[in-house]
Length: 148
Image (cartoon, rainbow, N blue to C red; front, side, top):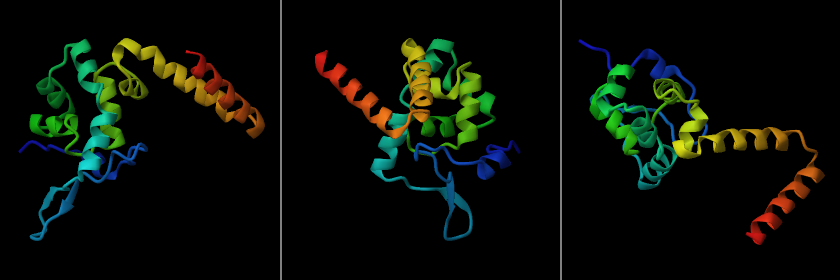
């Protein structure tokens, strides 16, 4: 019998966006069943993973091929992509590897993949600013946005 989920799936750290939680909960009979997500959780998952399908199209990888590469069932991958089931950080990183992208790039449209790098650079800059300089930087950004 093929193992659908690796042991790593259940031990790995959870994704920091809050869209990734425990993939299953125990039912009344002790068997594992999928956790029912609230509409808000489904919406958050869809928002976080909204560009994965675009990356799949760019790399010419079908849902079936992605499922095979992840050693998972195609319906499980479909549930991820539709936001109905949470994914762990290790699974998200593996999807990025398969799609030949860095994990942070999957959060952006492939046509704007340099945007991920710009956000990363901005975060690194912000991290090293003292609080006063950081506030001035934010104010400058807001002023620039108003001019557009």
